[in-house]
Picture 1 (cartoon, rainbow, N blue to C red):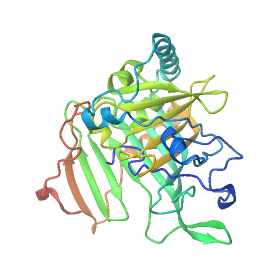
Picture 2: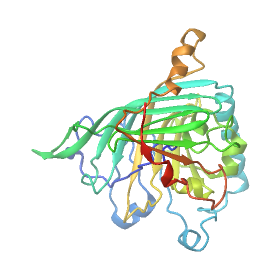
Picture 3: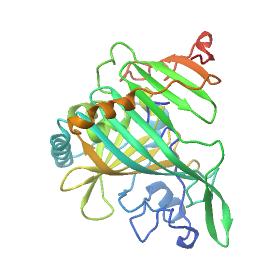
Picture 4: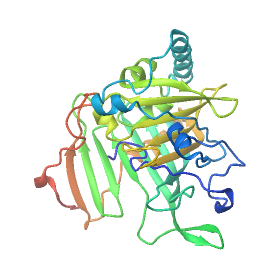
Length: 344
């Protein structure tokens, strides 16, 4: 879905450090992510995040809850002390981010997929920009992307591929517009009346950079997990609603424990399985800027007015579901009659 950062979320098991290059997150720069189910089954290390990444130890969802009741809490209930600590942490995070009107940042993204690259080697690496304007405007664009192209003398090789581009979507407050340059397709999803002028909460982006503590706990099962090193807090958020679960199984957010600024986000694919489908995306944020000065506001808001797609692209019009509906309608309700070539 266009309205979700990392909708192609993916994860892979790690290999030895000599298979990695400078572009690959390395053990020397950070801490490994080790899903408990994978560690128990394979006793191997997981891929290493990059310089600013912080990763934890996500627990596999309770099997009975996953099969019998998808709406059940995926982990045991927090103790009173754990809930009190979590509430205080979320409030501190909310206080830090309260008042965000505009936000922009650069990001790096590592995409792991066993179907596209060996274990421990990213299938793609991309860089890009995120922009957000409260309450309902956003832009996500991968500006560069390289692909795994095999091994040479024991080292993975990466290169751009002709005609292959990264993800790009814009929300202008009335529509979510996704540009798929690989398929020459533009998908325009109309926001329901109840979502216009509201937080664009179908994506993790708003709660990462403009947290509402009450809202995140109403839409997600939230807990703190053990951080891999001092100086950070690690938060897990498991979506309660099907519309969100269709986009990602769980996200982890790493916070600086002094400034409560997000430094990384890890998103697990909807069908994530530590043994059979280890897929994820890993993001690192840098140059985070909030509430830009007035002189740059016009240029900033131009980001939310996307250009029309080329005339030979297909345009598909859809409707987004109302946010927060448990087990609701599918994420997209495309009408075949709306599929037509773009016109200028």
